[in-house]
Image (tube, rainbow, N blue to C red; front, side):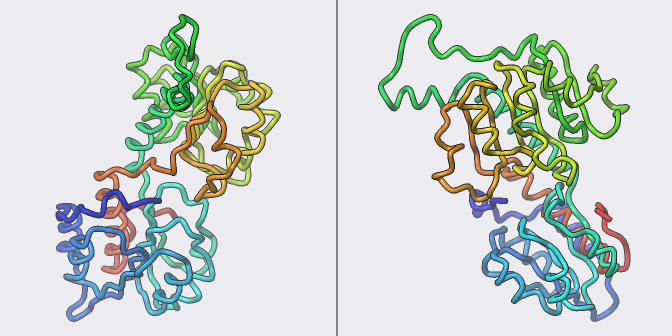
Length: 345
């Protein structure tokens, strides 16, 4: 999760101001609130300080967070670092609530929260639009060979011939979406304007919302066999870890394009490298990878047919505002005696 492009935002989101003003704490009670990263607008922190005693970690590495955690009653967890028993032990028994700034919660030990009866909130739905936008952007960039084309220019390898740098067509194509929750449905909504031929989806269960998009529920294997574009938007779980492995890539079309905006662990990355190098699939667009941060020497970075961006799915101005405000509301609501507005458990 990156906030550096947004450091200059210092205006006050109305939703955050309202959340703070509407939090009714007992007289003279100022909850102790920890914000685990300093790279958020100063106005956000100052707003929380109207009613809370706020500690802000100077950095975002685990040691700094753990050092600042003891005594906190509420935590705004602004990192994707592991959120587990160690954090809860260090915080102490007075901890009432933690909220993340993410929709996916694969880095959170939810059972630890259940055992201790500590409320846990997250920020679903608000991520649907920005993540769907970057997914469609990666689809176009990979299908039309943006990265490879730039390399051709840099290497003075520009050919003015009819069949040079031909890409894949989106109109009339079959699109498969693995995971048809909020993000998957928002991608389907975006694709309406691209005149795709068919829309397939797979997941644990059929979705009644799929009828609105004329999306057909199929098995995972059928989706791989028939799709020209495959979007990964499912959660990372024990069942989906390395779901896209060498066997899966063998079932895909050699003209297919893979887009992953979910979690890097859903893809066997060495197998993906092999599939891209061998031509088992045409191209890939990745906003997530393994590990993160990705070393620049990783083999995936040397592939002309792979677009890689550094987990920028929610890195927009409005997304930061919305996620921070919802996370704050989750925490403030519990500290005032209620429930998270967006509970994970």
